[in-house]
Figure 1 (cartoon, rainbow, N blue to C red):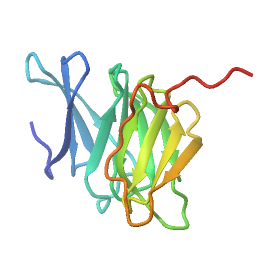
Figure 2: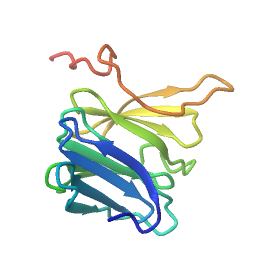
Figure 3: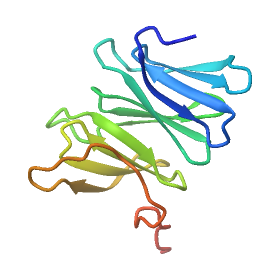
Figure 4: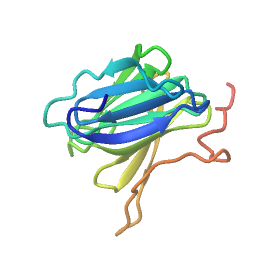
Length: 163
């Protein structure tokens, strides 16, 4: 069963047992790779009709799912196995520019997200447990961020120093 308004993102779970897809209908379909049957849908709240296509990112351990729209400054974090909403994060880029998201990726340990703006001039790092912004980067003049990814040696992947 497809999406009502086209498909934007399709991603396998790390163990290749599930397929996650989303698009213009504000729904994530979660299907079994073995049978092809839909297991459940994740209905994304607060995604208006003019919000653009829904996008998703899946954590490397397959436990967490992030959904976001290209035209809204909101990320929803979900339990990827059950579809239970865990946290809603708003205002990552602030209201002064009404900027929105282009891409999002989990750190290898799923404790952080990197999110880049549609304008491409900045990326922010978000703590997934609290929703707090923990850092940001600005693109060099005339350059822009187009996609997000974490590398295992990234300083944002390292555990925070103990106090």
